[in-house]
Image (cartoon, rainbow, N blue to C red; front, side, top):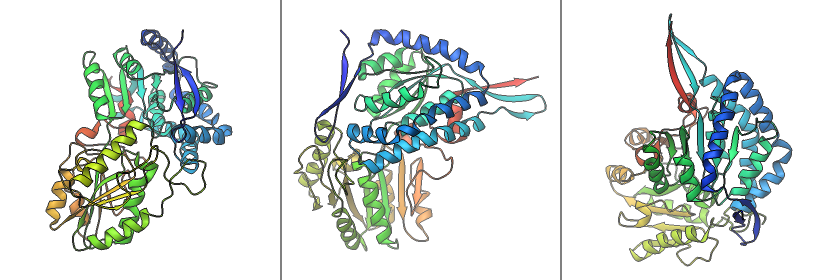
Length: 446
């Protein structure tokens, strides 16, 4: 009897649908089919591969509304955010394919030497639930453009939207070139241990460590983004209203369930009281509820386990002396009401770990060196932000993160890489250099 994976609406608990679980024993055959399909795919000129991918992603366009509703129901984010993610996948897939093609062109380094970018074989893509289409596409598209086949394992929290996207792409893609497998950690482990050549993963550090250990035996390549605990520094000469707007928007985006959400804010004590007032007022204007309720901009937390983890962080802060300016630890699942915490200290869980919920956590500092030290005192290093005047850039230069924002968010513009430092990243994606990680560099001299 085939096992199934059930998907429920996090707001209501209602069963939305089910998908068949891929048995761990079947993973070997899945990957073997991928290798066979990849051999045919890589023989096609790269421009033809890109044309096929453009046609495949065009299949999503007539289904945007239905896909957005499914994404909202399954993950919980409001319909505006779901529509943006689905549209980005549909219209951005072809753009990303062309960007990758440009990055993967052969280049001549001298009269007799050419650098080529060749397929690796089969790429395992393991994606998260918080941005189930966007994060998957960022890994799948360059892998396919490079001539690889892909075995895609979405999060067990969002299997339906992933399956819906893949079903539409299959209308144009060759058989077995992009295969989807469903399940939990058992299936993920079987995929990692199978005959894949590269593992592209976005998710938690704990899972990332397991993947690295499993990949070591075969010396498999890795591209991994492992979350963050992103700091923000507010200097005395910052535009406080702009800083507060960013702080709240970043902390609350996607109900705080975002790897680059602002998690720790260090504010100059000379302006801290005013900044706290701005933040609390803005945070109090956010509406919490289901995706289909008008005006909602904070949806449900993905599951009971994550809800309890957020509550634990807030309760820990309360017990260790934090001031609660809004919300607090008395929260009823599946929602977390907008919460603002002041006087965060290094002993608190929310300073050490990723809270991953709609919580603004602040702390005062007297010397900028103290703020820099606390911002850097973390195993994470995905993003960091500084709001300030003339010296903001100098402060930003001292922060240990892969992506820095000065008076703005992180991530950059254009085709900048998405990259983490410290234990937030192993390899990276996006940008020409990121696209090339999905290929084997070959130097040919004639």
